Length: 187
Image (cartoon, rainbow, N blue to C red; front, top):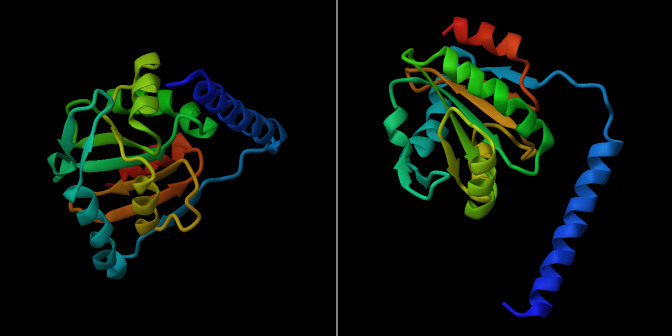
């Protein structure tokens, strides 16, 4: 890489960082309730399409090893779409790790689907202790989240899938863990 390219990449990275900082600082301090939906039983059949698409994927994990997501079939699954540059995503990760620790040996698995480059996800995972598998999807993760009902493409976006393969609930925005724990108790 030439010095000229390095300077150009640095300038672009600084611009993105400045825009992110500006948005973060100027965002309202009030936390809005996450947008949630509960899937009615008669609509459950329509929710198997995105679940089947999810289970059909094989994605690299943070270490670069490709993993089949079908390995999680038959478990209650909490799928968290996130990105390292998304402050609410990063803020909820310690609580998600704690939740995964509470459910070790139980029928719940949390997975993270990172919407960023493999190198950024690997760097992030190396800096922070994450107690659940994190996979790299790049921008295709946004398309997958849209199939689950995330029409705006916002992050974080979380999907609760029952062991029966049906979408039970979706959450847009930072999770409210009291509500999530109540939803998990109803599975």
